[in-house]
Image (cartoon, rainbow, N blue to C red; front, side, top):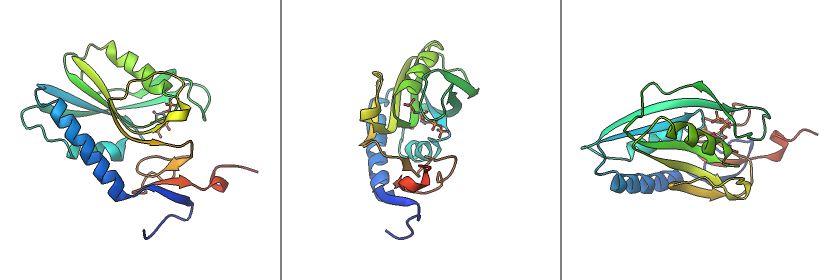
Amino acid sequence: MANIHPNVKQVLYTEDDIKQRVAQMGKMIEADYKDSKELVFIGILKGSFMFMSDLVRSVHLPNTLVSLDFMSISSYGHSTSSSGVVKINMDLKESIEGKDVIVVEDIIDSGLTLKHLLGMLHDRLPRSINTCVLLRKKEGLKTDVPIKYLGFDIPMVFIIGYGLDFAERYREIPYLGELKEECYKTA
Ligand code: PRP
């Protein structure tokens, strides 16, 4: 593959790998929601922006009222590990009451953020709520969190690109790569 970023140790999933998997996920969502009247995709910023954009373009539900909304959240406390207590920086624009909801996340590590978020969204009385997650670090999980649609299980490496950052860098990279250790470890 041409033009690999110099700080990338190895490419985990190419643009083509991602495209194929997202298309499969879109097909599954289409089948499951073909009778839905109103479906809202909720993208959790910032990491999910690229995945959300590709995912919704792969879902064709002409008889459903499909809409998109976004939330920006951050975890209280430690910057490197999730506390599971979520602070809402930017809330949804529309009510989700009575609607089918799919929460779109880029990555699950401990699972604590998504677990807490699902609790908050349940209280807003959606008709149904499911999750669509591109990447899961299975060994990082600290809680049982339901993932209805999963892209890939990944090892415990520092992954960047396709929306995922390190200190706000690398989100624009179109593939998923492992960041070189010297880029995040200080001596
Ligand atoms: C990532 C991801 C989840 C959370 C997962 O967001 O999008 O929200 O971390 O971690 P957890 O499973 O251990 O709780 P991040 O805080 O990196 O923000 P960003 O999406 O703006 O990059």
